[in-house]
Every structure is written in C-alpha cells, then in structure tokens.
Image (cartoon, rainbow, N blue to C red; front, side, top):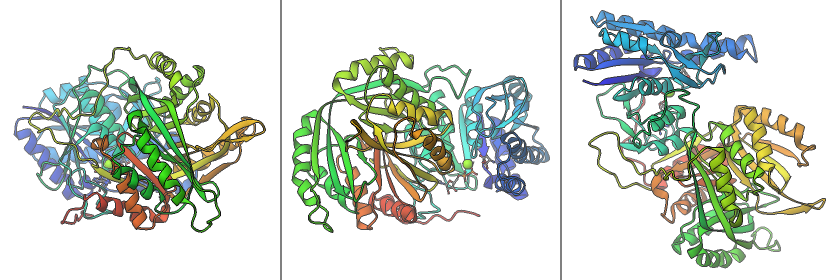
Length: 610
Ligand code: ADP
Ligand code: ASP
Ligand code: MG
C-alpha cells in the first residue's frame, strides 16, 4: 500500500466525461490498496477565460483581486471530482488550499509555499477518504488569511509540495501528453518520449520554456527527494520519471524559500579565450566551434555578446592543459573571420587570459529567485572581486574572476550563503529514487526548449569595476525581475577615463518595459549609457547532463542554425545547457533544426487531444 499524490491538469479535467474518467482512475488506484490525495487544476482553459474577463474590466487589475478571481477555477473542479468519486461509492472530500492549510507568502499572483499543514489531510485519509485539493492556491501567513495563487501553471507545485509534506511514496502528474518529450510536440510533432530525466535537467528545461512541469514543482521534488512521474491522462503507459538524489533531511518549514544555495564550488584550472570583432552573420560560431571540436578541445562556458556595429565578441573558457590547442585554433581561424561584405574591416583579434578561476553557487531555482544571483554579485563586490564573465542556470550561477581573487571570493560566498567548507559537491549523476531503474548512460542532449516570451535588455558602456553587476541585478531583484543569459561584452572601451563594457541579459517579456524604464531612470546617476530593449527575440536551448566533457555539442547546435541561415544574436552556456537568442520569427525553425540535428526526432508523430 502506498500513499500517492495524483495531479490532473486542465485538459484532463476539461469536461464532465473527463472528470468521470479521472474519478475512475482514482477509484482504481484506491481499490488497488493505496491512499490518495488528488490535486486538480481549473477545467480546460478556465483560468485563461478569467484573466480575459479581468482584462476587459481593467488594464492593470489589482493582484489581490486577480487571486480572488483565478482561485475560483480550481474550486469548481474539486467539488465536481469529489462528487464523481462519491457517485462511484468512493468516499471523498474536496478542500481549498486554505482549508488544507497550504500556507504561502503574502505575495499575490506569485506566492511561494511556506508550509503545508498535514493534520486535516491525514485525518481524512485515515478515514478512508480521497482528499481532492485545489491546486495553484494557498492562504497567506500574515494573519489576514488572504487567498493567494502560486503563478500560472502552479498546480504542479501544489501537488509536489503536498507530496513532500505528507511524505507520499510518489507524485504522479497526469497531463495531455504521454510524459516529458524531447521537445514540445505542438511545435515538433516528431518529439519522442523520454523514459527518465534528472531533476536538474528537468529544472533547466522547465525554466527554459518546457511548460509540461512548473519549474518550482521540480525544485521541490529535487530538494525533498519526491519521486515524480509525468503520465498521460488517457492511457496506462508508464510516462517519464524525474529522478533525484536522496533527500538531505531538509526542514518542511519555509518549504519554498529556505536555502536556495546548497554549495559553493570553484575551479582554478581555467583559462579564457576571446575573439573580438567577429562578423555578425550566420555560420561564424559554427565554424569556430566546429574547428575547436575537430581538434578535440572541450570548451566549458561560451558567451557571444550582442553585436556592436556589425561584429560580435565570442569568448569561451577551457581547462589550462588544453589552452595552447584552443588558442592555436582561435588564432588560425581569426583571419578567415574577416567580414566578407567589408574586406577592409579589421580581422578578429584573439585575446587569452590565463589567470582566471570559476566560482559557482549551486542549488535549485536560481533564475526563479533573482535575489540569489544578486546576493552573489553583491558578496563578490563587497570582497572587491571584479566579475569577468557570468553564467546563469536554474541549478548554478558561475562567475569567472581573476585567479588571485578566487580564495577571497569562495570564502565570502560560503559565509554569505552559510555553507560549511566541508560540503561535498552534489553531482547530477542520477541516483534514482525509483528503486529498479537502470543507471542510464547520459545522452549529451536530453531535450530542446523554446521560449518565445523573452525580451533582451542591453545597457551600453557600464563602468567595468566591482559592484556594477551587484547594483544592476540587485535593482532588478528588488523588483522581482528574473534574468537569464547575462553577457558582458569582451571589448573594453575607455570613455571619460573609465574602462567600460556593454552588458546584455534576457528577462520575461512581460517584465521588459518595466525593467527598461527602471534602469533608464538610474542610468545617468550610475554613469551608464543607453538602455535598449528588444522584444522580438526567441531563446532556444539544449539541455543535457551528458554534455559535460563532450566536445562538439555546441558546434552541432551552431551548425544546425547555420545550415538554416539563422543568425545567432547571443550565446550563453552553463554546464548542462546551451542557449542561443535568435530573431523571434526564426524561433520555431531554430527549434526544429536543432531537435533534428541531435537525432531526437522519432518516426511517429504525436497527436495531442484538443
Ligand atoms: P496541464 O494542464 O496538464 O498542466 P500543460 O499545458 O501545463 O498541461 O503542460 C502540458 C503541455 O506542455 C503539453 O501539451 C505540451 O504542449 C507542452 N510541452 C512543452 N514542452 C514539452 C515537453 N518537453 N514535453 C512534453 N510536453 C511539453
Ligand atoms: N489553473 C492554473 C493555470 O491555468 C494553474 C494550473 O493549471 O497549473 O495556470
Ligand atoms: Mg501545467
């Protein structure tokens, strides 16, 4: 007998017939000897409909009233599912988030869960009832008993949090696709089912645009070791297991906000190669990294900054033993990268920096919690450490700094994030909580994701000194604006006696205007140049824990884009992902090309039920 949490998404409860089918599955699971909490979403597109209604009344409705409105959708479903179960003779009771005691921050429309009271749930379960819980909603902890919601798609998070709180044996997410696929089947019908994926990989995919799971649900599964499976509502097929390491005995208090960072790591065996002024046209990155991979040079971080005039900078890091080879490849290719449309243009210049180190904070939910990266940058600034390169991902933020500053940086970060020096690094090798799973050899690319809801902000001529990233990202964090793909240009220009660089980063499109206005207001005071917003971008990313130590993965991605004449506007990588910004109208084509290039396409096409 197991204690199971099952979550059913909007499509799965989209009609009376589907609710009855859900009730049948629940009934069967109980009859097989299990205890069940069922978490449900609003029926079909109800939540979208409610948002539309609100927008017909107000262009900027109060966030409190939005929560009051949107939380009604789930309340309809819990009652109907409970009735459907009772019709089958199965005792059941529906409960809102407040009735369960899903206690959250008082932050309307994006509240994080603080804790979940389990007494009432347990009492009903012990009485043999199925408890049907409204997903996506909670109640504030500030004594006001405010109804809160967790953010769109948040029912997944409710389900996994309940599973963690009641220590369920596992959590099943039932949806309209057979599981987690190599990419969104609505955009690439040849996407294939993945049997198993690590939490860290799924966290990246979810945050990079794969909406099959809410990223915060994966964070909780990772942090509390909740075995998680995504399955189809229409079949009995096994679906996809999301594997995590053994739980570390985390407290269930401050469930979603405690300890986002669980380790500080560093690597002093690093060197950086930059190519300045490479032409801004399709195929350049493919050529450079194609040659690099033919020479079996394994690169770590790669960045390509936004163009300045008609050229870009590309920089990458390698381990010091292979620096000579990497430098030779870059030097050999630089003359050939001269702009063909302008043969008189300067040729690309190669710059090598030997004495660098990479310091990283590791954990879960870094992008979703903008304050974490901001705290890292502020800590480095206070320790007088200048940041040369930044790499962000949901599971890690890394900064390339001067080697001489490494010890200072690590000590300061360990203190700031309260990490014991003795903590051993948490690796992403899958130790499946699912008992019988074989240890898979990790494929370099597990999945591909497209995010069409991004915007890019560039700030020109930021003074290059410690504290700038801290100021900038601290400001954004205070406005709760999450950033990704932070890229400083490698070119340094001295203006008014101060060395300066451009910095660019991506934000959610809905935050773009806000961020631009706010940053423009402080630009003069902080000595920055112009703030530029571009909303017509798409971010396409590959994710895979197996890409570490495999030369040629980046080259293959860039080559796929080059063959389709798609220009890469920005590149940023972390250990387990590579993201490229391309023009918005080329996003879907880019996704399809990359998915095919990595051999992820299957022979069967998915048909998703309406
Ligand atoms: P639910 O209402 O059940 O929560 P969602 O619509 O939130 O369902 O998530 C399921 C959808 O996620 C699928 O219909 C699919 O279009 C989309 N999706 C995006 N990326 C992926 C992926 N890699 N694998 C599976 N589905 C994906
Ligand atoms: N009903 C909410 C939404 O549409 C929550 C969810 O379905 O996960 O965003
Ligand atoms: Mg969903």
